[in-house]
Length: 104
Image 1: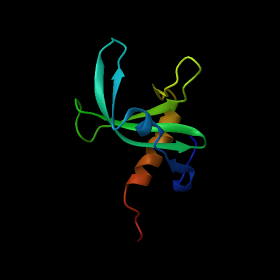
Image 2: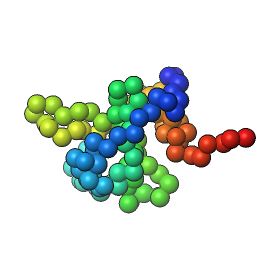
Image 3: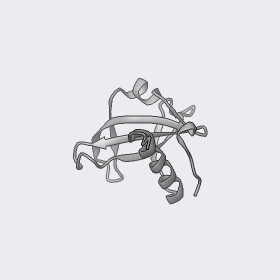
Image 4: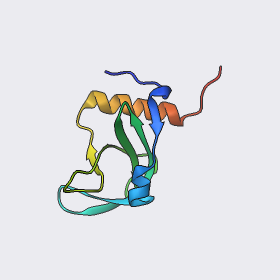
């Protein structure tokens, strides 16, 4: 598993500029659900987004990869992080960067 630390994370706002504070994601079954964009950041050139659904408990969030738009698709695309090690590393880094620093 790749280990990251706070200095590897760069906060970004490209999704917020493109979509605003809320986005709708379409599930495999074709249904769309609203999500609040909580945070977005970049680690070693890869962008990630943290979203919260109003349909889930308040403390449950979705961590997704952000793929840049292509020639056919100008807007960025949000995709599931399929690699368990990547998800774990990025999740731990986000938690570390959003929790208070323990100075003891």
